[in-house]
Amino acid sequence: MSDGIDKLPQSDALPVFEAGWVWLAGAGPGDPGLLTLHALNGLQQADVVVYDALVDTSILQWVKPGAVVDYAGKRGGKPSPKQRDITLKLIDYAREGKRVLRLKGGDPFVFGRGGEEALGLVAAKVPFRVIPGITAGIGGLSYAGIPATHRDCNQAVTFLTGHDQTGLTPDAINWDGIAKGSPVIVMYMAMKHLETIADKLIAGGRSASEPVGIVCNASLPSQQVLETTLGECAEAARTSALEPPAIVCVGEVVRLRAGLDWLGALNGRVLDADPLDLKNTLEAAAGRL
Image 1 (cartoon, rainbow, N blue to C red):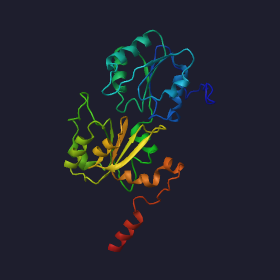
Image 2: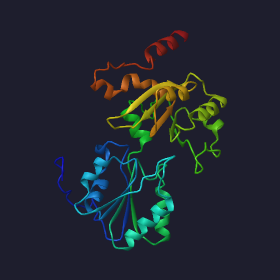
Image 3: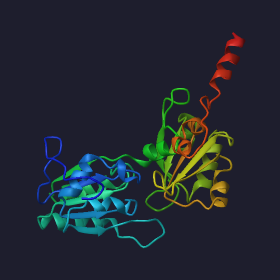
Image 4: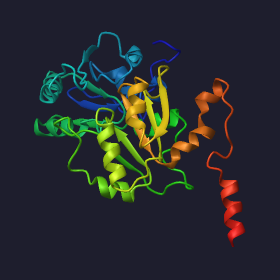
């Protein structure tokens, strides 16, 4: 085992991986350090690891010797395994008596098709465990210095996907309702349809000048962050040559990056202790009383 990580001791908090079981585990947004102990425990016991495209391959260093490592990555616009075939593969491995770890980027139950795979296992009478992971819409934003919530900005946040099963902008989403009702919107898989989505939100009442943060390759050394506005985000993403995977955040919390970009601070960025200019806002409000 590399990086000084020895075999994890078994305890009541670290379950034994039984033969014929499938564990659906989230690997987090990318940084291997964000893997949970339960997922690491699964990696060290699994006979088979079936992993996705968004799983950082350095995580696979913790797979036990002799285990089968099976790539089942799905990427938009590229040749990818069919979801049904992936689920059947999990079932076949489990029926062979293997301990099967299904390793997915982020959290398996947040836009990760983990629910679909789990229901397939239920239908096949294959026992399973779910191991949550840090989803990119929270962890990825945190690595960019953008909190999903801040009490001076929002008391609600909406997570949505930028495309449906057909690959198009989801028609089932009430864009007007979200535009009017959600102070912060966090979007997965939205880059392809960013212009359409921005237009729908502006048509629903959002300001074209509202801050937008786009985080690509979140939490990895190749992470890129673009700060822009809702009216300009699509063109800014194009001219910056940003590519998925990306998380897009719409809302005033994006302004907080000026004070919370902790990775930038490690490289010399001077942080702003009052990025929302709350002091002047409060003084102005007091003067009106």
